[in-house]
Image 1 (cartoon, rainbow, N blue to C red):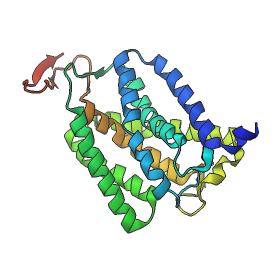
Image 2 (cartoon, rainbow, N blue to C red):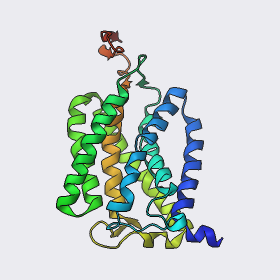
Image 3 (spheres, helix red, strand yellow):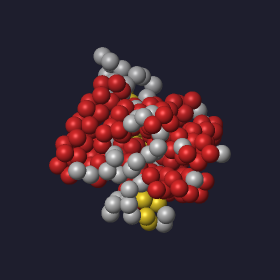
Image 4 (cartoon, rainbow, N blue to C red):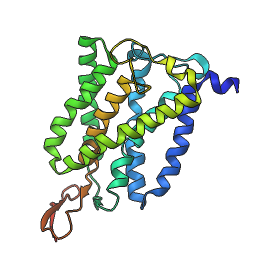
Length: 250
C-alpha cells in the first residue's frame, strides 16, 4: 500500500490504461478500435516535453526519480486515445473509414512539426507551459476546421463530452489518492481548483476535445455518413496516384 500511495502518477495511469482497453471492447469494429489506438500512439511523442517544460505547472513523482518515465508515455497514450473515445463512440454508426491508405504519416509529421514549433515559440514568450499548450491546440483548430469543415459538429460534441470524461477520471484519481492533487502547482490561474479539478486540466481538455476530431479526420481521412434521407456528395480519397471517388448518398 505504501508503494501505491508513493507513486499515484504511475498507478493512476496504469488503472486508466486498463479501463481504456476495456472500453475499446464496446466499439463496434476493428476500424473504430484502430482509430482510437492510433490517436493514442500519435500523442506519445509529446511526453518528451514533460521533463523540461511542465515543471511550472506540476511536479509528478516518478518511479526511479527520473525526470521522465514510463508514466509519461502511458499518460500521453491515455490522453490521446481517451480524447477520441467520445466522438468515436457517439458517432460509431456514422463514421466512414477510408478504403484506401491515406498519406497519414506525411500529414502527421507536418502537423507535429508545426505544432511543436508553435508550442516552443509560445512557451519562450509566455513562460507558461500549460497556457502555451492550450493556445497551440486552439490555434491548430482554426486551419483544421477550414480543411475539415464537415466535422464541425463532431468537434463541438467532443469538445463538450471529453472534458466531462477527463475531469471525472481526475476526480476519481484524487479520491483514490487524496494527496495526488498536491503534484499540481497552485499558481493561479491554472493551478486553482474548480470543482476539485485544476483549471488548467479543464481548459486543456476542452481545447483537446475540440481539435482532436479535426486532427484525426485530416490525418486519417475518415468521414461522416450524411443524415438519412439526404442526398449528399461523399468524396472518398483514393490512394497514391488514384483519383478521388465521389458517391451520391441518399
